[in-house]
Image (spheres, one colour):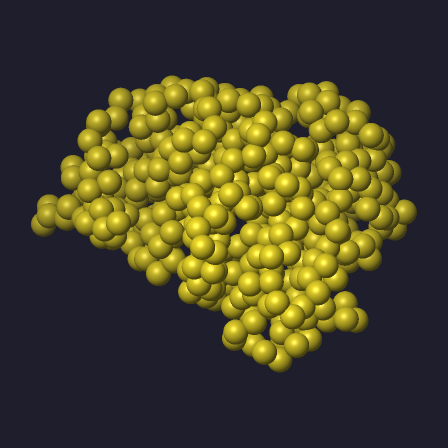
Length: 471
């Protein structure tokens, strides 16, 4: 049986999925964990990603039986910074997207252009925040001069895994658009922005080549390797995402994104104007806190995920005035890297059910804020929920009840890995990504019936947010 392999290298783990080339049927899945991290310093050794990949790949191929792997692609966590010396050795642990130590650098970088945030957005579609690679480069330049002196190459997590597979120093337009120094508007690197970090370095020798969307960039064990992409771009491929549909991904963190035919730029910085993996564009808003918040509250209440659902569904919409602002580990949308969570509306008769409901509503309201930012730059007439958090009955009910457009869940357990499979097949056989996704039947959704929700929930949440962090 001919199969393609899709790799999803996330913050938490590496997953490998095998799909039949003809039907798209999932032949096998396996995963292996990465070391846990906690912001503000969130770092991992890239070698841990490679070990997890080798473990997961060997496991899934062994379990699948006789298969012929004819293509492979890696979709990785966006934005991180992997630094290599001239010999190709990793200099220091990789800084991940949710590392917020470079927040001061983001503010400093914005001030280096006369037009500030608006000029950055016009140049690269996004305003630098602590997640972006350019802020991490600035942090490294000022914080670790010895490491900076050794720097020969900078890569993103998916770039590095592709490099380990092929030896090719290459990236793709989707992931490159999250660096803060490659422009989806022009399709080129912005050398003037990199010169703000270090004007004495020849950056053309430091950053990887940007491959074409369906390019084969090398081989691993005789298997053609596609250029790979970022995790959100991979999810868009795996969901067969079409214009008018927004995705809200509910994982440890959260994202809201949609495809667009034209590049977008948001001078407020709420929406990152990314490119996608196919040649279009992917405006995206990201929150740092999603299921990590409900997990923490479940732990405090002494229940598991199912138990939290039961408690939350037993409380009325609005949690009798209890509100939770879910900025537990800082926040990116809005840009509050040093924020913490807030709990408001407590009275002496507060119940476990109200606290559980407030946690779910707080995460839902935060993601709805991110969705509103996307709707300001791209038309949205339907929302699809994905990610582990979307399996929560309480979250589905709350989100659908508060959202003013139809909401569905996707028939996609691992959208990022599925998208990597799509990219691997498209590169190996010269098909378009849309044709592969269509032939495989990706993009099926199940509508969610919206339950009645208090009209005051989002207003109540907004009041708490304004009180905690006045703009």
